[in-house]
Image (tube, rainbow, N blue to C red; front, side, top):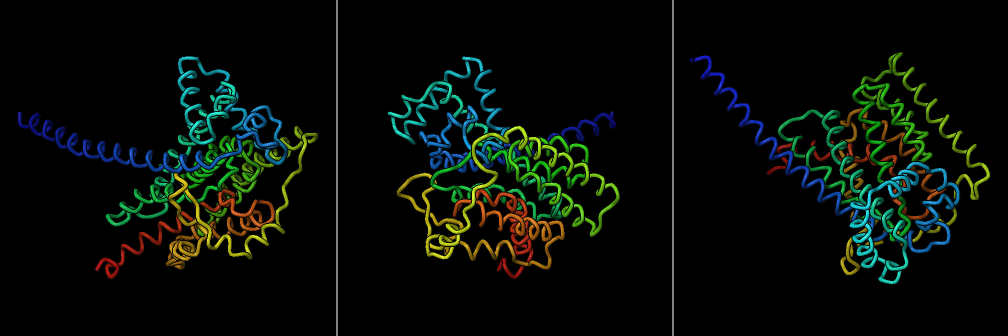
Length: 381
């Protein structure tokens, strides 16, 4: 009887510890979903590429008529088109109705009425997909952080709260127009790849990279980032790491070349060159005083390069630099060394989304600073 009594007490004890975890997990899901919703709302509010743009309208995106280099990004266009064609009416009809309401609010009633049901449904699928991919990305950021940094009583709060901060800061990074349907999937697939690298799941990285290169050609750099992360974990590369890197490079290079062969006669060029207009922009006062309205036109906030926030962000990223793990410092330097020149040469002015290759490591560097700050008792007085 005593043994049975002890067993029942143990079971009760286990259930009592599981219940708060369930509540905490549910609360975390709610907070992450709210933060992701805020970011995607900002994206949707500003995203005007669907408004009969001569080159980048949603109709041209879905029928593949938009020019290169955007035409190289095959995955999300085909996924959205396939989903819209296959979705049953019981789901499609309410989505079309809500999509038109959203278009009425952001683009005007005349455009919402003129848009076909197929495009309205595709618009809904794109935004719902963006929300799902960003929500999962927040949990991936949390998981990656828990692998990279020791979980302590101090760090746990930071590791759980930081994804919310990331999503909220993301809301001020979107431009007033020209957001693309593959943006949030790109962040998701990069984070998923990094998680697989950190957990040494070498085989699973290959299908992930195949999807990544179909989504956007910048995935050709992912294996390099993975190799630097693997090196940073132990300050050396094993023979298995070299083999993994070779397989990963093979996947992305084959995809990169195959897509270009398939689309060799498609209109457009391999890149868009914006160096001189970018130089004029960055040497003016515009980026350093720029503001944006993430949700409502009368409520301005500074953009990431505004002097009000830029210094703070840089200190958060580079604070306690020598103490940061090598798997954070070196990938950040490598991604920045690749991404910044690409940003200046080929991206349009303040398209901060095009710095997405650096986002995971900027995030980890800032999280380290946050943890280190709260670990110093002098900062708690």
